[in-house]
Length: 130
Image 1 (tube, rainbow, N blue to C red):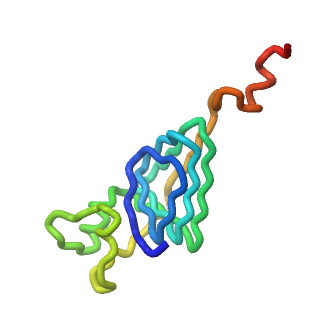
Image 2 (cartoon, one colour):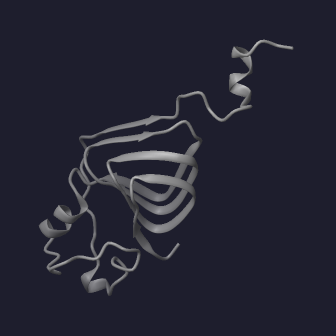
Image 3 (cartoon, rainbow, N blue to C red):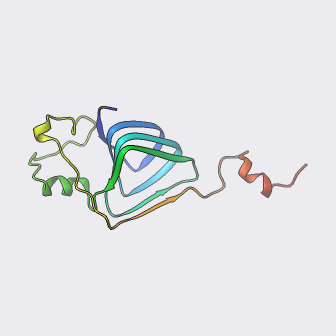
């Protein structure tokens, strides 16, 4: 948990990071567990959707940028012409490290409704007993 990383919109599996940047709209394609010191979401209307289990543990905190990550970095004076957003892009010297500025006015929705996997106990009530 010593790396900062930006992920795409489809999530699955176990994700570990120091600082994890996530998009505004997230599709759960499988069960997902996130453990990170800081979890930062882009945008201001966060929606996490998919019929899979989802849990996340921000150890030190979480926040919402209110805008795209690139825009937030430019507002803070990040001057690299073509910022790299792989996991190594944020792991620079302390003098150049991006420190997110988060907003207070946002919405956060997690929708894990749906039929669920075949054979899931949640669906037993809907199937006739043999």
